[in-house]
Length: 544
Image (spheres, rainbow, N blue to C red):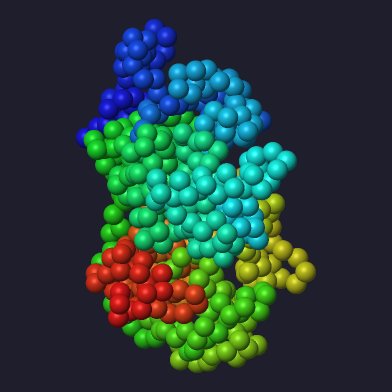
């Protein structure tokens, strides 16, 4: 299979260059446009951007036609965010050219990008939570000194956009009290009020339930129908296939291929992203559950402000199975994982390990490790690693007092480095350099380092939070295999992930949290994303 248009190294058929460096197809399109056809909405030509020794974008060419949804995919560090930051004026390219609707422009700020008709919706919303929807939309577009006149005009415009695009939202609602899906809708409205004809969405579904994601896709299709141009950045290939018209692939700062979506496939896109054959399907046989390894009985957990985030939850985890915990981010999964790992205290209930209740004194990370509980935290930077440390130091965190690393007041430096080298070899951490600073590894290799530290200690129970968050697709394949291998070795694995595809593919059983409560339990072969999405949204199990 193969998509139309350019295929750089890594694709099956490289383009034929014209004397000017473009492909013959590009040259033909230029001639067509010169004859009076509609120019593309966006054309990036020869974009280069470096940050010191790091060449983030290398001679990138991107063409986005008007009135289409154009996807951009690539591993972390591939240069997607840098390229979009150049388009939106956060950075200025070192060299290259930007054309909007056929006109060459220079974009040095977000204000200039907005003036060019470009709007951007970020993964982490830019709303002031205590202000109303109307006030958030007005920020930066107040309409002069007479705020009342500006507010009235924007209120009318919001009503018009709501009717035209199905983007209804109460202008007087407080932003922080809206659902995540509605907050994202406000971000889109902000861009449209400012006259955006081109919308850039960066990982827009990362914080949405499946139902909210479906609503977003419906809105984007309506916008496309009104001849808006949409750039859709995501790592979810399923979304690319279902939503986009064309998709471009970036790898190591370069644009390596562009496909017509209908003429490509997820495996082909994955191969282009990584530069080698990637197996997307998880090869997993049936589970053989054994004795109960961990049990939660009516546990209650509060956050740092004293708010109940886990509300009387009970479940059991058995040896030889993977129990998935699904839910939209912020519904108690993080606090649950931290409580099970001994990081956060219980406010009620009890935790049983192999049939024995843990005392309050035992519920701490050190003692739980001693009884065979491994923990891969959700946020490797905040909780799993010390970024300025050398890799060999990060590889022993939590186990630094063991005799393996020395006795008394003195560490055995050679033993520490040797142990880290062995772990890095077993988990394919690249570069295999125990003395390299942790911060200098890619996200995927940092995650492999955390997994190596926890798994190589042979835990009986493994608690894993967001194992592939911010991880390249090649590393995802490796990490999934390792998690399944733990299950097959008879270990009990609890998996917390906001990625429903990951939960469905890896889990043997799934429990769903919404608002800190358990809303249902499913087996993967008896459910689907829609069913789980209803439970994640708090719909009762019977109704779901």
